[in-house]
Structure formats: structure tokens, C-alpha cells
Image (cartoon, rainbow, N blue to C red):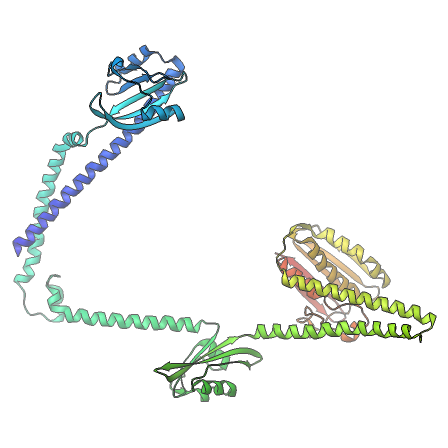
Length: 552
């Protein structure tokens, strides 16, 4: 066994030595030839530059060839005839137009090729450059044979190989002794002394120990996998509940416990119907235990949840139920807003249409006097204008909902828009002796100009409508922001969160005296969101309101 191990280690060392030597030789050979090509290219270019400046004289080439005995220098005319060659008599050379490096040089100014030269019986690397006069300068050098290179370093290689061999034999002998010694001194050992035995012997003594370690490793992996699944479940936005076939709660993530109003503590081995007092949820879970999939909406603490109860089967037998609770409060709220919007639109449209129809019938039947007809016509005109405004605002909101992307954003001056809005609202403001001012330095934002104008117009129009006689409306331009303040009736605190809802009016009694569609702030909010802006509201009853629009 000693000889076998020793011989194997020596063979491995020798093989490694030979392989590394061959790899080093080939790498050196490749590096040498790469350097040679680069040197040849530079040398050819320098020679060509010299000939272009001094003229491509053959005597000049002969003088240069005397200093480059290891280079073959040739000059080929534009018709392919060899005019000069420092190694071969030009009369014995055929036409060179078909040489690859000559063809490439004529096309691109410089050409390269590698081939075996029949003339000199050597493999050459050729580099050709086209001169200004149309002739081709070609310089070639013979490749160094890999065996020639090896011959040059054979003594060094043999010396290094000898040193490595001697060192390998010594190391192999030392390692073999360490391998054999534990075998020669083997004895019955307990588990605590396993480390005294060499690694090659230990498998016979500790196989059971390794198997136990593998089992422990698998158990640790299972625990880690279970912990990861628990972490994922605990961080889900949805509630997850698992109940077994005895209606005992097996698992519930953090979200589910929060939804059910339970504290964060383990509830294992406890009946599910004793932990929660939500009849609809308990009833759905029991029906699902009969093999039915249940899906319904459940309201818990003013929040709406979509509940899915799915039975778990094992060979057609229900072994438990998985309950998922999805928070759909926002969806339910949006649905409610849509219903309210439909009802409000119907009401808002019906009121002016009823008025218009009533006055029209009075005129049609002839019951109205000539003086009343003019008054009725004026009221019909006003109601028609109100109806058109309502339809226009509804269309604006619909477009904002359906087309949130703005395709024509540009640099917009907040001050210019504010000044235009102040001018357009001047007549309305003058009726109640309200002063509109624009202050602050200009600020340029990147947004849709028309929609920014609608935001500022709606805010400023409301400031005029709900102001006191002789009051003030100010527009303050800041850094990518505009603040609209008034001295009007203000907004009740409990209405601040709802003022941007469609058709919502904070002061119902006062709003009846003021014409409008109730959609202005909704349009302003939607337009702000599309243009990456936010609207902040500050208001107190009878002290006025402040709306600040910040563009991000």
C-alpha cells in the first residue's frame, strides 16, 4: 500500500510538471508571436512613412536591408511586379498581385497574411503597406518554430524539472508516511478520539456519525424552510387562516389576527369558532368543511374584505379549510363613489331639465303673459347654461379618468397662468367688491398648460364664490408651487377630507345660493395627480381657506 500511494503521488507530480511546462511553452510562444506581429506592423508603417517622405528609391531599401538582416523587404509595383527583394532575385519571382496581403493593402492601405513561402521554404508573416506612389512595401519575417524556442530554453526547463521532481519525491514520501502511520497504529477508538485517525481511515469509524449529521442537517433545512414560509405568510397583505377537520385553528398569519382583532400569540389546538365571534365567517368555514368553495364579502370594523374558503382534500376526504381574506375596502369605496356619482349626476341633470320643461310648457300653452315669457326665456337660458356647464365638467372628469397620460407637457409659467386667471375672474370678483392679487416670483414647471390653468381657475373661482363681500383672494407663486388663499366662509373640519369628492358641497345651505356644478375641486384634484402635483388644504370656518398646489 505504501508503494502504491508513493508511486501515485510521484506520477501525479510528474504529470503536473509536464503539463505546466507545456502550457507555459505554448503561452510564451503565442505571446512572442503576438509581439512579433505588433513589432512588424510598427516597423512597416515607419518604413513606409520614411519612403513616402524621401521617395521609394530601391537604393534606399538596400541600405535599410543591410540593417535588417532578419527581415525580408520587398517592393512591388502597382502592376504586381516585384521591383526589389533583399532575399531573392526579383527575376525569379512571379506576379504578386494575387498575394492576400497585396490585395488587402490595395483596398484598405494595409494588409497582413501568414503562409509558407515556397521560395525560402519557411513560414512567414507578411505585412504590406501601400505607398503614396501606388507601389506596395512589404516586410516579412520568419516565424520562430516552437521547437526552436523549446531548444533555446531546454537547459533551464530540465533544471527546473529536476528540482521539482526531487521536491515532489520528498513531499510524496512525507505524505505517504502520514497516511500509513495511522493505519499501522490503528486501535479501537471512541468518538472523542476520531480526530486522531487519518481522514482516509475515519469513514470506517464514523459512518454512522456522518449519517446522523446528515439527518440533523435535513432537519435544520426543514426548520429553516418552515421559518421562511412562516415569514412570508406573516408579511402577506392578505389574511391567511388554516383550520383542520376538527375545526381547530392550525395557523393564522399576522394580518389575519389583526383583522379578527386577536392578539399576536399562538392559538394552536383551540377551536376556531371560540376564537372569533364573526358568525358569517364561522358559517362559511363550516360550509366549506363540507367540500364547498365559498366566496363572499364581509365587513369587519368598517373595512370590507373578500373572503375565500377553500376545502383541502385528501383522497376525497376534507382534511381542513384554508381561508383567505383580501382587503377590498378601496374597491368597495370606489364602487360606492360610482353609485353616488350616478345618482348625483341624475339629480343634477334632472333639476335644470325639469325647470326648462316647466317654463317651456307654460309658454307653449299660452298661459304666460308676454312679460312673463321674457322672464321664462331668461330662466330657461340660465338653466341651459348650468346644464351645459355640468355636462362639460362631467366630460372633463371622464377624460381625466380615461386618459391619465399627458402627451403635450411643456415648460409652463405659473405666474402667467395666474395672471390670466385673475383677469378672467375680474368681473365676477368686482360684483362683490373682491380683490384678486398675484404675488411672488415666477416659477417654471413641466406640465400640461391647459390642465394647470384648470387647476388654478377652479381653486380661484371657488375662492371668489365662497368669499365675503369686500374680501380678498391672493395667489402666491413659490418654487414650483402656487398658493390660493381667500377670506371667505371657510370649510368645516369634518368636511376637509371630502371636498374633492364629486358633487360634494361642504355648506349645503350656502351652496344653494351659489351656482356651480360641484365638480370643480374634483377636476382640480384629477388634473393635479396627472401632472404629478399634490393639493394641500388649510381652512377654518369664517376665517377663509388656503389651497397649496405643489408640482413635483
